[in-house]
Length: 401
Image 1 (cartoon, rainbow, N blue to C red):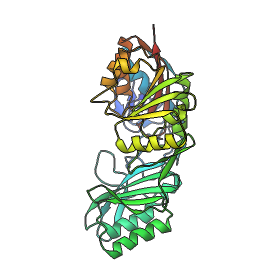
Image 2 (cartoon, rainbow, N blue to C red):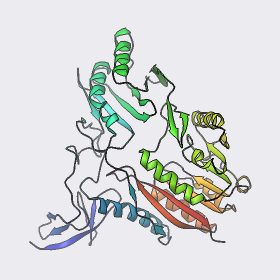
Image 3 (cartoon, rainbow, N blue to C red):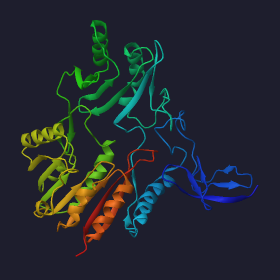
Image 4 (tube, rainbow, N blue to C red):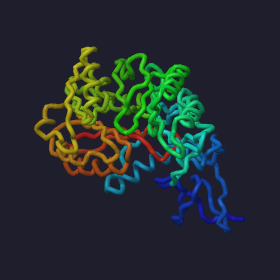
């Protein structure tokens, strides 16, 4: 048996790719295909730690070691930039969040009569993997999976389906259930007992008309840069606390000594609150609830932040509006920020800290900025979606002239 075709890299969706360009599922760099087309394991294969892998869609890369996973994250950034004709900048060693550190998740639930299944869906399928083990969820979230399974089995309509959104916040776990009506005294008491027994920070249900609190003993908050911020239902947090810290550190380094910063797509203030100690910050966000939460928190703690409610896709800040800022922080959704980036490219802002969860849209936006006279100084990949093909990055982009 001789090795004919070595695996040289991992493609964007997680398959190994041979030197001849063949895609091979569950392959790692250093593996090879023998003459019969069988996979021969190399030095970067590892035993997947979870019994549900690879069926569960929550992870795609548990079979590769950390060295290969870090290289995969770096290659995704370099490949996306090369696709836009951008020379590979300094790509720093990727930061990886540890296992069992994910602090937010949306699980699917489906009734099977008097029982329910709860978990992530199977890869490329709507079938739910009934979660009995998870190596990515924070223990506080995983501890609720079995109790939630029993609760949803009791409250979901027969053969009905719903979802369970769990987020670890200051007071414990915030839970939002969909797909249940929970009408009547018995259902109400079941929800209260569940919330009380598991010391939830908050429990709400959404029957189609928006979240309705059923348990909220204290205000729901999340602490960002030592500042408690009211946490809206469905609010966005970085996937892990340490991943958030890595991104904040990279953004702080990127903006340096800037005294006036515009934080665009600011959310609840992950970066604004971290920068407000040394700079005056304009925080712009389309979610009204996030804007209110951040402004109230900033006012309470006398942070130098002014929040603006604005849809940056429909009404990006103009080059004139940007001109008074020493730096811009940009943290858009997966689609990127093409229209806002075009006005940035026409501005004279010295430094941009770009945070992205999609290397492809980041590379497209970086090419627009490059045409306007900017260049990438460095990129810091962050693998907070452990063993997943999803990733984050932070980049420092500055004017060439």
